[in-house]
Image (cartoon, rainbow, N blue to C red):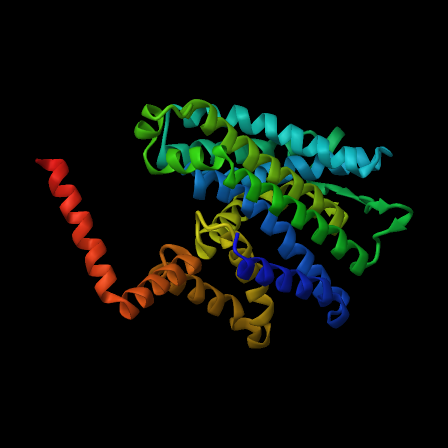
Amino acid sequence: MSLRKILFLLAGLAILIALPFSQSNYGLLVLSSWLIYSIAAMGLNLTLGYAGQISLAQAGFMALGAYTVALMTMAGIAWPFALIAAMLLCFVLGLLLGYPALRVQHHFLAFVTLAFNALVILVLRNEEWLTGGTYGLTGIPRPEIFGMKTMMATPFYYFVLGLFVLTALALYGIIRSPWGRAFKGLRENPIRANSLGVDVRKMTLLAFAIGAAYGGLAGGLIAQLTQYIEPHSFGLPISLKILLMVIVGGAGFFFGPVLGAFLIVLAPEFLRFTEGYYLMLYAVLVIVLMVFCPTGLLGLAERAKNALKQRRNPQATAWTTKAALDSNGEKNQ
């Protein structure tokens, strides 16, 4: 990573650290929600954007993570163990859900993951003895770190920000590793990736499992943020919302989910001044983005950057194109 990018990231982190000094409690609640959904969207971006496996089950994994953390912390178990247990549970179930991806693709896989999400909601709703059914669970405790409670909005925001940074660094490490290159090969051409020695079966399962673990962590944090959960808070609309975050920001771009989550979570707040029309305006904005930016906002920025390079140095671009054509011609002879 270049020095310029590192300085840019440090500046962004400094802004996030300073934000609580200018925000109300409600503003910090919204910002915490943005960071949590960014974690869930980063997990889905690994599964969809990097590995090319579509999933509509991310909200289901969030539900499992939320209920795991809620039940364990309400039973007196320390929050680190609860969050780790939520991630491990979702990792294992993500592995199992990845098996259908070995046989079906595209919209068929979307239906399989959608069915899994519906199954999770049904189980949580019907097992009232454990989950509280449609009444849900309330009074979920927030974490205590070295004796410091996070009941107030500011400490909890910093707690979420810390986990967000850690998960982003972990994901960056995965993407830069041989696993990350294997995920990209799986997305581009599974047959060619297999011929190059990539274990397609293993990488497909890992893509689902790691993405699910991120969803489980996000669900656990949502439970601690709201201190109340019920099954229908994790239905299909939430899975579609997370999918929209990835697509709007830019699938396959590292910061795409963060940008997408920022727009999807915060745009309705900025449009509330329009009163009864804000949902309509929000829908129009999303439609316009999808029509004119099918590769997401970061994809649009990438195209604009490449176009600017071509305009500044058209001769180099022409020579590159000519060399590529000559190379293809030699291969075809």
